[in-house]
Image (cartoon, rainbow, N blue to C red):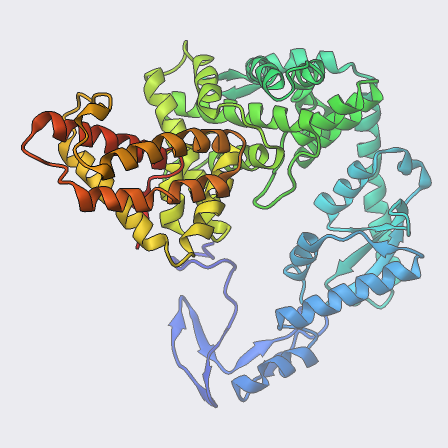
Length: 548
């Protein structure tokens, strides 16, 4: 902020500057304010000037002037006093750490009072009442032992007035007006069919190039229907998923959500239930926004999970289609959070459908408005999700080289990536892993140096000249069949052990023959054999990326 005619800026107008080093004042000026050895207490309770002789006396001096400058001390008093006040009302504070933080940073001296409101407002859903008190007034809700909302609230004031009961009466008058509005909005919404709101979405812009929210709903419905077929082939959830998709954004134009945007989804669930929609549909409407923040809860139902993936994938593919991919400094559509949400949901629910195909279907829906080639967009989205997966795995404590070796092979199916990374991390901790990785790197390096881009011929056993060649080929055929089945069954630890069993015949092969012999047919045959060995390792991870 700028103050008066000064060019200096600060968060608030600067009234005074206390600047001490030991018992000495540090002399300087900022704007037209000179530093000194004085400060001031609470504006109303102790407005007089206070001399601070030494920095060590600062907190005590302010405390005596009705200012608790220590943030932790102030928070402790706020938490203790709101709990005590709620108990005097026969209830307890509804836990809200974020509101405690907000209040703690708004006050200097906590003065807590309680207030009540008419029981008639309890006919409005708790979520609406709590949000009205919390967002508009910074009031704490009070609940009974069964977590039912009580018709009262607790508020933290910044001034200890002579008559705190009069202060409480003022708060009650204010909240009565707020809750009356909320009740009016809710009753009006409850009398409106949700289909009416769906039609109104045609006039609500999602993004200038990507159309209306109604357009988005139609795309989500198609994507979600396909996901329902993939996760429940028996058709058990498809009807609910498609119905939930149709209604999932309807509450955005409801009066309550327009007044309290944080209740999007929550009110959709409430209104759907009031309209007689199945529980699975109502729940999915709320849950399709999850996770709403990093580490937040995931959808609790498979219907909600499928809808959440569809909604998030549509947003990501739409933005990428018109060149709105996140940058290092900008992610206005929260695509990173949505990408992480997709991967976390797929892993938690064991969704093994192809994420590559999901991306392709989602990108295809934007063919008419896309400013980027479809293939390039699909590749960019896949790379974006791959990066998000690496981020999640790093946050979970896995080594970067292990993550890279697995994700560079594929991130399909998503749940298998977690299991492959965990299995490889366990094997890497074994003492004989290093020579195994070294042997595989040798195989890969030879193939890369000799690969002409024309591929390798089939292995011809008639060209074998040494027992180590036939031994390695026999081991390959035995292990290949087992590993393929183990990977399909999700038995990744055993698959890795079987792959590791190839180390001995690989070492014997390199000891017994020279791969790059002058005999061209023989050389190509040996390279073809190594190529097949590399393919077995490559089904699991790119071992060449492992640090040893």
